[in-house]
Length: 88
Image (cartoon, rainbow, N blue to C red; front, side):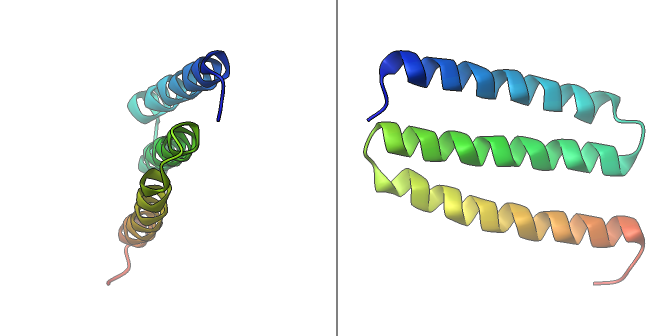
């Protein structure tokens, strides 16, 4: 189990990282920059779910994080293919 102070420090670092990624999504001069920002947010959310699952000794959060990571990866591939101009 993670101590509560360690959990809060990690959680605040994750929130700061999400804030920086949101700035990239808003400011991003091109569409690929915005997609990378959204993918970064997805990755940070996955890390947050794993850390929360570890801190509460609940395996279900880690299982959900694995499924979310797979869906995030597939959606990023489809968006990249769309931006490239290819057909599905």
